[in-house]
Length: 306
Image (cartoon, rainbow, N blue to C red; front, side, top):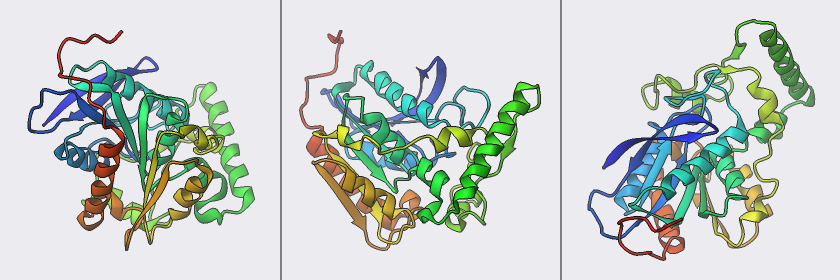
């Protein structure tokens, strides 16, 4: 069962979908906030995971990030890591107001770039009781150093110069400078998901404002990842993912309890939607959340929370 919802984040109205188990229960539900990849929208891989988690007995909230999808914000398509983290915290706030949700049993799941944003938000939002990622990406690292850290240092400088020029031009009244960033030349697997019927959505991966770049480059997903402890951290990767090193290094930096779960044969994007890889990922996530979002707090009804 799913319901369209809205909530505020930094005075912007975000559009979401709340997935609930089909079988009603008298007890308040454990819930998971699910963040979508950079440039993606709630209807894509985030909804695949949310719907499956709902089948396992969890409430799951997906939403379009500010400036993206059906959510408010100008300029359209802006990728602001700090706002993305605020969106996750605002999604948690929204769940705490719902009568069917146990506000003491809220976890979060980040997919791709949200696999950086969710841990970043959870570092300082103690309401997130269990933190998980699938095919995590640190967009800041990728923009600074390239995927696999293969980028030549002058490239980052050139991106910052583009962002600076765009800000100046827009301040002088020019239209927002935009850039295509999901291209076959950049990453053929990601292109195939977003640009073909496999995962295409008309509101996804629009050309982003160039001044997204300076916001992203200054951002570090895992700088204070140890602050998640003593809450649990689970990071799921495919054995063949070109981003696997990001989760491996994040786990090394994190404090216990922590787990790196590897799906044999999986790639970064196959974990988005390929059943043979999504199924074991959801099984591990369900067990993880069932273990760490365990304490029920009575039946749903009039709220007594302050």
